[in-house]
Amino acid sequence: MSCVASVTNALVVALFGLPFVVSMMIPLLLRSSPAAARTLTLVTSVATALCATALLPRAATDPTLVIRWLPGTGPMTFSLSATSLYAALVTTWAASLTLLATTSSDRDTPPSLFALVLLALSAGNVAFLSKHFLSRYVALEIVALSIALAPLVELKGDIAGRGFWFVFVMLRLGGVGLLSTIKILYAASGTLEITPALEAAAALDGAHLGWVVLGLLLAVWVKLGSWPLHVWISWGRGLSPGTQAWLYAALMPNLGAYLLYRVTPLLALEPTVQSLLLWLGAGAAVLAGVS
Image (cartoon, rainbow, N blue to C red; front, side):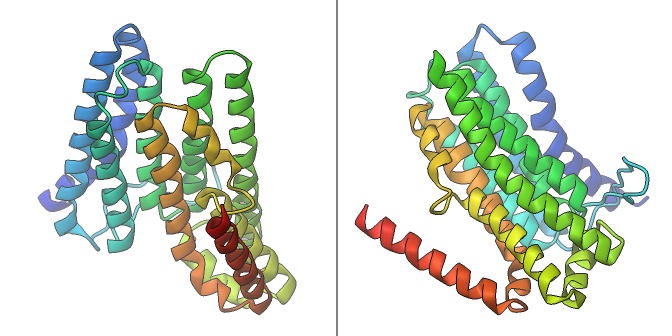
């Protein structure tokens, strides 16, 4: 393995692993020190963002990292395409800047919440760079769980439990849409590699293609928090400003926008879904204008 490939792999591992490791450390070592947890979270997010920045000259040169997990699912690899890398870069820097901007207003934030922020950051970067449906799906589910746990960690009383279950169920709805799509594409293509699986969708009959597009749009619609599936975002308003701004208003919508970018070519194959999307978009715009 060349030196360039080794450095690229190390930076990608840090992009995933650094926030993950620190997220595991915070509840164990800093559970009674919110200030120390906040400082460590900020430093970790900046270091992770610098790793993403250092990968920019290596865009379009995929790392040689390979993960083999469940038998029959194939090797899981990662991409440093410009779109995926810029999405990870912008989202990671957004976490750092949000933490920095809310330092004074989030002084009493529980350390466990900072652990969730870093766990979601790690999983979000995996989702952006993954070339395999299974690793992307698992990463998205970890992000969704982190977001759902935020009200349970920060709020008090019965409202905390209601917030967790409401957000969890709403985001799981998007997960179901994505999982159903993955199953159809896997049956059609025989692979869980994202690009060839999406390309195989063009050969599907009308009914199966319609279900694929609808499943993907459901996942996108939930993640973007678009009407009428926007209610889960309202639970972020009761949380600390930094948590609400990044977990609820930045991370999950960014993942939804990236997923929409990846599946947009499929929309041209299904005119009925295009019309449905147009009417839903128009309805959301009207409601946003009058609210």
